[in-house]
Image 1 (cartoon, one colour):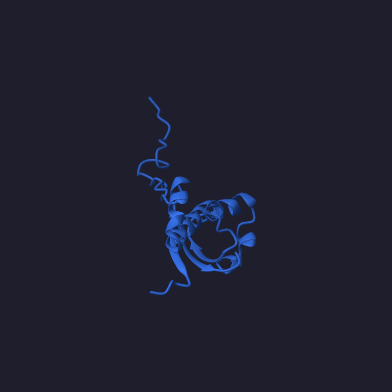
Image 2 (cartoon, rainbow, N blue to C red):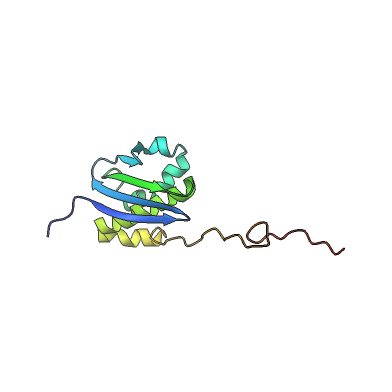
Length: 131
């Protein structure tokens, strides 16, 4: 069986979903057809997104194409991070241990709690008046 020229994976966080396509290349990252620095302008988000590549030492050896929708910027960034980590595991099984040790293969299950009827928000209550 020939090795595939592309590895794909899905990452999710809150309500954001990211489809990640990993191809051997020079390290070019495109998110929704836009460059990484244009889509995520802050360096903190860029570093968060590229964390799986820097931990495994694969920074600059893969071109990444990402389609992401839903959620806000932080949720999208962390969804992409999970997708990249999962795609790297498909690319090479020796990447699994460092990614697992860094906690990058675990899906964060925290979601927004729904609003309940008779209340202004999920847990907040209206002001109580005795009289």
